[in-house]
Amino acid sequence: MTALRRTLAALSQYPSAVAGLAIIAAMVLFSIYVVIAIPYSEAIDLWRGGEGVWLENPRTAKPKWVNLFPGVNLPETMVLGPAGESDDASADAPADASVQKERQAVSEEMTDVITTFTFDYSADDFPQEISLFLTSEHERKRPLVSLTWLTPDGREIRIADVTVEGPVTVRFSQEEKLARRLDGERAEIGLFADPASDQDDPMPLKGTYRLVAAGLVFEDDADVDARLVVYGQVYGLAGTDHLRRDLMLALMWGMPVALAFGLLAAVGTSVSTFIVAAIGVWFGGIVDAAIQRITEVNLILPALPILIMVGLFYSRSIWVMLAVIIALSVFSSGIKTSRAVFLQIKESPYFEAARAYGAGNFRIIFLYLIPRLIPTLVPGFVVAIPSFVFLEATLAVLNLGDPLLPTWGKVLSDARVNDALYQGNYYWVLEPAALLLVSGLGFSMVGFALDRVFNPRLRDL
Image (cartoon, rainbow, N blue to C red; front, side):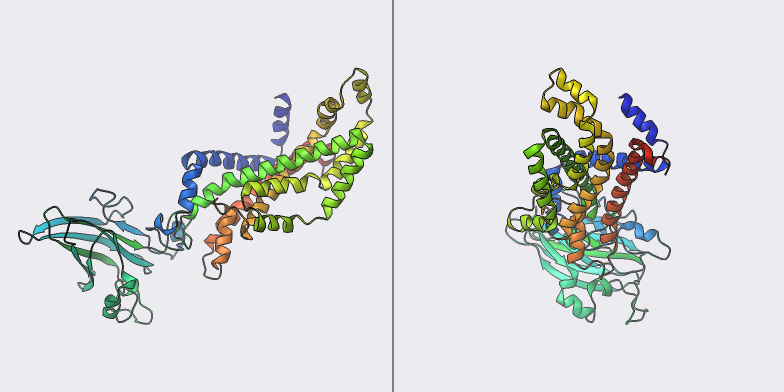
């Protein structure tokens, strides 16, 4: 503890180290929170759920904070309708929206179930799409639902007539009759366009819109529930991808995965390299020669192509990749550097004293030889962590990452495959890239400061 306090006191003299420690501490605390708040199995199910889980999210939507920029007023997603078995408006609905449901008896056998969605639209652009999700409760006769759209200037537009049997999704853009009524214009534009605006460059008509879903049921206990989703162009803090998935999930879970991968890889490679180098130096002879020949052969082998072959022909599991990386990094150039220092330390007098009182070889290696180089191990170990984090992201970008885990590299890979930059979805690339850069910066600043602390010759530079 005394040595730790001295190290921390020395690091406090370097503002870059303090900033780096703050970044690392924030990442560790946030990773703990993520693992507790979103368990591993739940994160995997959400990420692999596809459109079924994220059905009410817009596709490739920008983050909400883009609306904070001057002159930007993109529409947000509005979800109106019953949540579960409740008939109250959804919690995702804006404050100025309402849903009213009423029943009116038409005859002894027929009843009108009328659901009216009312909301204000004030965005400067059109929504992505509009969908209505219908569910019914009936025994024999299927309910019939008529949909009517009411605009702020008093126009009534007939959407469709739908027979409801089980869950039914009405996608306005796929209704052919509606497209003809809108003169071939897409539904999300034609229903919101201002008639007075230029037809070649339409503008949305701001004001209060209503959708009336008039359901006709033919049994006393029959019912129809409706849920309206007006998909906006912005969503959440991180936006969405091509499968409507909230990228915040991958950005959050990517942090503990990156830290765990980088930490385990750095520990495995640094410690194992030190141990192998120390064993070779202490025993010398054929042991040291064998280690040096293996190291020289390993230095020639290209690590990335080997990882690619493992991913293609064996497994893409992140833990398999981690094991291969550690195996390839044990006999690295670090053995040469450590061996040179160990050869000098080995000649110190107290090693002869240790032999004199009967200390065994491995006791000398692990209690006397290796501890002498720990001060040089720590800075290199800290600096190595971000390199392995970037390696994991590189494998994912090459489509060799773990297909199950939501990681920063997986987000970048999906962005590359779906041409995010060419389509103007810069957030899809910049968000994970920024997190990778911040994590690398934090560890690098601490590592360079530790190098100055443990290496007195660097303190005056």
